[in-house]
Amino acid sequence: MNQQPLPGASTVLTMGILSIVGTLFCCGPFGAIFSIIGLVKAKTANQLYQQNPENYTDYSNVKTGKILSYIGLALSIISLVFVILYFGFIVAAITTGELSGEF
Image 1 (cartoon, rainbow, N blue to C red):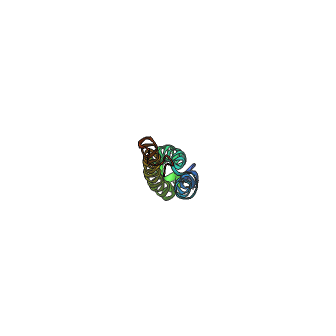
Image 2 (image 1 turned 60 degrees about the horizontal axis):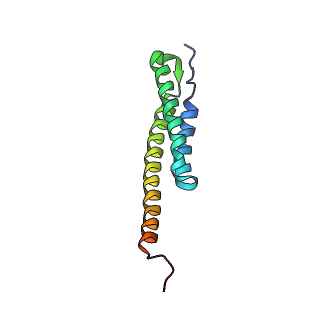
Image 3 (image 1 turned 90 degrees about the vertical axis):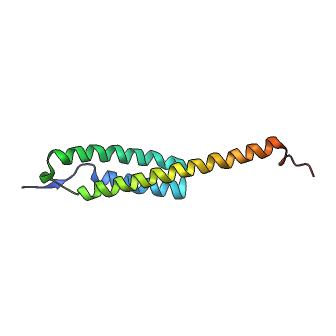
């Protein structure tokens, strides 16, 4: 049998890595976009692999990318919660007059 690389396997792995790196170092909650793209691509690659597993290689990249996408999604949700809490505390401090600049 002539095995070929699984279409989309490298894309899934790349999106998983970008979701974590994007969340931690760059964009915060916007890393969820890469994570969602990675999970959608993993689903389609997984369905393709399940139809004919003997025809494809690189299924481990799909599994690794899927795990990384889930981790990136969790980190981005945590980051989003922290951003909401941060701005919530600022708004609460302003409305109570603690940051009004009065000495």
